[in-house]
Image (cartoon, rainbow, N blue to C red; front, side):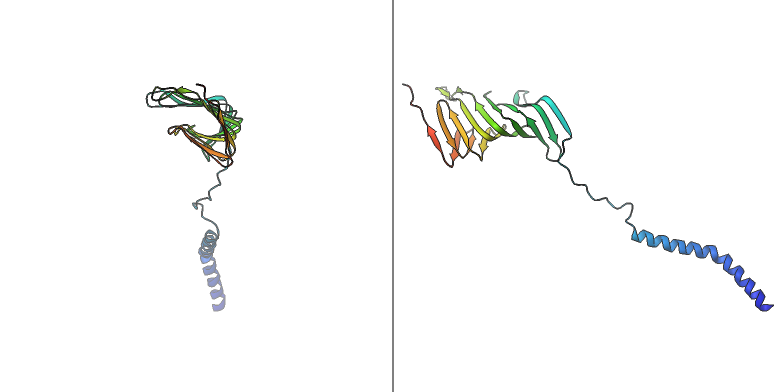
Length: 207
């Protein structure tokens, strides 16, 4: 009898503590799973930024103005695609107009262009041309001749009034003609540097 009572008492105690035991095992299993599973609050790995356009334009014009509201530069194209990862604008058949402080006009064109977001750094590809029209000299004597740069690649900075290329170019200054493998031109100094295989034809000046 004593053994039977002890057996019943043991079963009663076991079933009484069974829920607590199961809860404990469940808590241990949950803790193990949490350690094995990445936390929900862990920061997700950064996704690589893709070079894809976020918007496009057709028959568009991008203009910039000075503090007095005067037009400084204008970039036009038949189609443009903006890429947010580089803040650049790819342009089909770009046309560029730029004015200096005296209102002197410089124009550019090409088959394809790549511009920064402000339109101040423009690369021209394919039959590229940049022309600075003739203008009166600063001292009032004579005139600064027309300048034209031709090449398959020209890099123009509208703010700094510079043009350069690391590819062969042709420079027309009035009726004179020069060619070179590389060049850079600074409108502020009026100096064009041609490098590499440089050739030139200077026409005689009329009396």
